[in-house]
Length: 82
View (cartoon, rainbow, N blue to C red):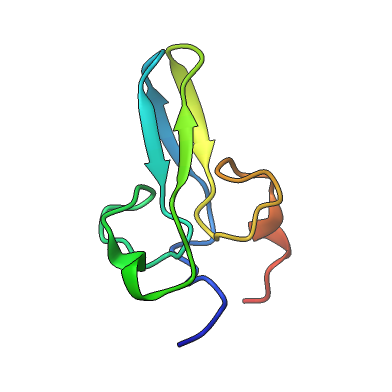
């Protein structure tokens, strides 16, 4: 079992979030419900990252699982090899 997350996609996931609602971002990259956790991390060292929306707005959740600003995209995907 690798200690690196699976790259779900090399682009962010734009999601409309609701103020006060809590979301659990998939950190392992194995979830079938990207960018959110579906429990697929159970046999890995990864755990989902809790995100509570501060306002109704669009946010960009990291798809490559490499962001230094998890769970949000920081542009790291643009530096990954093809």
